[in-house]
Length: 357
Ligand SMILES: *Cc1c(COP(=O)(O)O)cnc(C)c1O
Image (cartoon, rainbow, N blue to C red; front, side, top):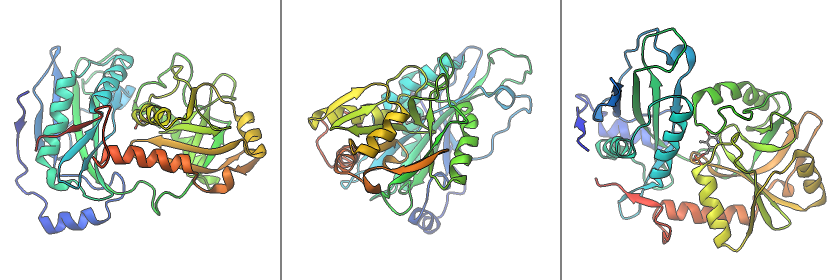
């Protein structure tokens, strides 16, 4: 696909870039360019790489009023050989298309999605950290039509940003403490829980704030109907190891289907673990943690990859999981996944895609 490249007239000087890359954190440092395509008159323009700059948006743009917005999150890794690898980008493209459909937005064809992402990586390749870091890519789409009536917009912007990132959790793979919210829910049957849309996050921030107030890192949401079944974290899927069986909640429409989740299910089966996608309720979690049947728990997603859960707090108390230390299955699965992502292990499933630089 033809991509127009408008290079930044004032690139970040190499020494300043090196300084920014030393401790980029997460989502704070951005590269010099971005990718954009517009949906007008029922079709997409060709992708265009431009200098990263503020958007000119009409204040009546539909996204600002009715939140027609979706996004993706993926990473590009620099291998020891200096190649750049994306991890299952076609899965992100397909999920973006499903999110678009749910939010009554036009789908971005996979070819356009890939062309935009890869052209941005190529243009800003000097920003890809080596070692532990990676280049986090944030494709998103917003409704730009200036119109206050309530109906799907007719004009959209598809845009991709890139951020060099370090390790998500400062201080390495320290187990996280999660807050089980019984006040707030994230998604209900028939709602938008399975779509990666900003609105889901807006609605979850108050619960995340509640979690932080209780000294927790993340919130774990229970189902909306019974406040009983464990669904997922604010932005990560969740796994439990009970009697040697790896359990993760099933995709019933209220859970976001993570690329990390699906990859870990495959790797766990390869490790010879019994794996079950089935409902698991909070009372059973408490009982299994108390009896010792629950030996590990972890959350997973592109940004943090795999984060052990060491403690669960809730309105009526708190309990530790496996003494609050990361277990061997959690460590093994993280290692197996990150080795493939970084091109340090064979990739029998063809999950990585090399970016032509
Ligand atoms: C993005 C996201 C995940 C994780 O998905 P990955 O593809 O593994 O990054 C999990 N839950 C929610 C709500 C998300 O938005």
